[in-house]
Image (cartoon, rainbow, N blue to C red):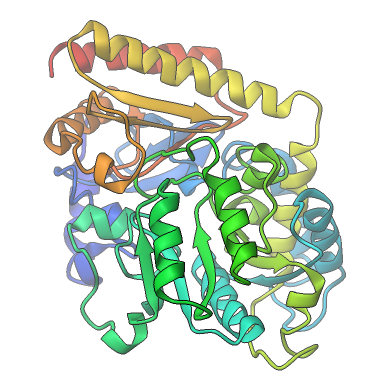
Length: 427
């Protein structure tokens, strides 16, 4: 595994950008060693600037559910490019993607497109407050909803990766109305509502956590949140930026049969291009300008290229057998990894849903962020490096979920498991 060019580029990058990256987790701080610099991607594979090839289980953090650089997506984009890269005006493609999203996601009757998951979550928080006339919100420890000030309280993912519980530069006044509870703990949520009567606008969560590693909801947890919020006149928001169209075509809410009031989306609905969205009940969404008084805007929102890639991606996901294929490949991967870990004497805990998976280096069940933090981070770092050297690209943090795609084959899974056996046998 040669890394000469990656090292040269990353060394130069550190003089140009903070930490040498445009997003913190890319710097490999939590796993150590030299980050690799990508040159190109295709299907289930990535190639770095030194010519090394890897089987990819990050998928640009989720959007590449059909595989990188899918030929049908590229063809649609090439045609769209000839018409221009940005309009800053209404575009018929917005109607097409909006209809597809509304048809697929149970909670969404109207939708607003934005440019990122962070923007979607920031906007939906403002909408929650505008609609209810209340200021406080509840989020869950280890759930990440983007880097807006009010969400950087006990956030997971990149914040956990860097070991920062919160971020300097976030005023206490901004986060004073953000209440937190452990994920999968209904009693903690009930207590917060009891302590703050008629003050809580709503509850926001990742219905399946991906930013503390992969953590599914306990039986009854999502249903319980639905009942608690309804009882207290508060809104329930599912952040499906990661799970939307990935663990089911209609997202986690269709998978588990629990319909929130509002939903945020991203990643998959952009087909690899920058995009986000928030939507929900018509009476709530009618608060958004220009239909209502709650202001939110964006020059690049509804960008024709992002709409094009999203439409084609969702079309591909509607083909028969798609989610069965994703489920089979992912289960084969995670079951194999767990079996090999146990055979080689490493306590692990993990699981998967459709095209999303996770593996923790702990023998104890993981129900929330505190459980996830008990993982052996040093062992994960060594495992990550070992897999990288075997040609397997995993998320460079114990606190990130993994992703498969329609491009991953049984041969890819077999090669990955062979690599894992070598690495775990020598860990």
